[in-house]
Image (cartoon, rainbow, N blue to C red; front, side, top):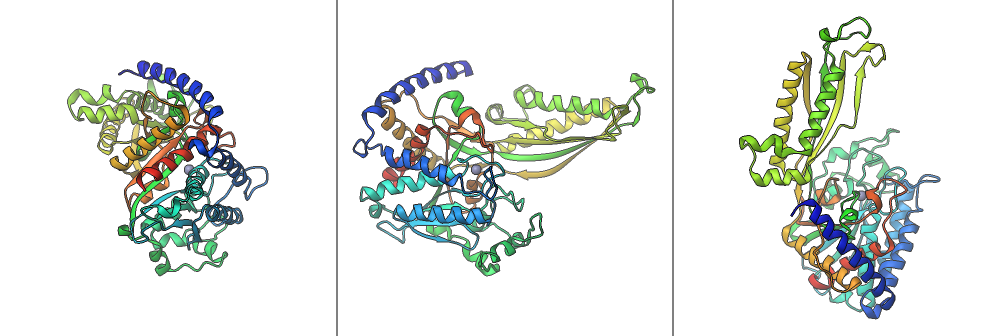
Length: 473
Ligand SMILES: [Zn+2]
């Protein structure tokens, strides 16, 4: 199926959903209808707004690891967890937990989580929606008398650090629980020289090597990890769906490319005699864009990539040059050196390596033709994390069921997406199988105060978690 037919089908479906939704919402808005609008939509929205006001800054939202606002947010989340019938505690990395044991406290537990920290000048949904939707769904089970009848323990975790704003090291909270946080991370300092260990001590938490290793969950005690998060991209809005299932989190490579030429006078060196690194860098950047827009044209011709890999690259490869600097950076000087970064992400690790190989070869060829010197440095490499196929299909069934509950019959299945952004699920995948759901956000905008999720999409999020718990737990 081509893109046009997907889009057409989707917009028809969207119109159908919109009209079906308007009808059913008016007709069924009580708990009797199985929609739990009061808890899953109205109360969840009130809580999102309330949590969105808990900030370290005046006039905008900012909550960083172990800050005063983070602790206030943690207490608020604990109140809501207790209101949902969960036993709560804060661990020694500042993660807030709420747990219900169900019928068998020794069974493997389902963990559901997202993060309570934010970026600077954040939106109110990033992280918070995943926590609040899970707590709201459990509250519905409590009101129905079903909480104690869960087949296995269910634990909601609000992670203390995903964004990494304060210490530049993401996943302090989830990495500790997954057992992959090195002890050296405790000595990382923030801008004012305060270490992670100091920040915890300021809040009467003494953390030593043993307490860090005690934080690690025993993998035999865990059934799986589910995370619900705003999409932070425009795909769900584009295809007209409130919810999507995440296939995996993209692997990532960061490069630093240095191009050296011959520095000279902008007025006196004839064009034919220049070795201009700026013009070369421009050609390299356009090459990167062309390759990432159409990897098929670059990779498939000599059989270095299987068709399935090229296909996966065509739908998931994204490349960005976000930073460029030039020396000496003057308007009347041909630069001597240009440096730029490349951020390259794809869901297929072999495909990503093939792209890097092809990109490097072609970059060196361009530099040779232009008589400039190129150096490509690999600064960061992280492999993709694939979500568990069975858990993902269970989440897909739950998402379809919740949309059906809200709109009546639907004609199509919720879309499957790749995540280009990192999430706590990446760290948790070292502990257990993971599954993720994305919720549509307006314009795909995130990490901004204009970040927005519609009231009914907040509802769909809570209802999906509820459907999943009802069916599988
Ligand atoms: Zn987030």
